[in-house]
Length: 105
Image (tube, rainbow, N blue to C red; front, top):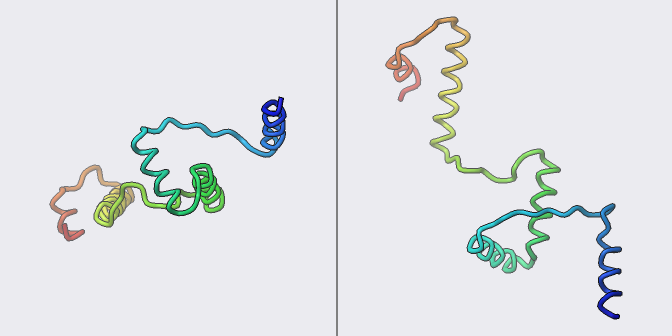
């Protein structure tokens, strides 16, 4: 009987109006390693996820860099700039050696 009262009050506290359920499949080893860090920071997994979601909602972007180091960012920016110039020039083709010289590659 006591268990039923707890379950009833638990659902009342976490009503759909105040919270939403988030589920994700995570490899067990990654989950455990991340949870170990969360606990060392003094938080549980749910708190870490809430912090992540809140930061994305606040800033409109992922709060960390995903797989791009400085060299990759430079290469991507150089490529994008070269492509914009190519489109603006109206030319159909440009020798790659010209781009290497222009961008010091």
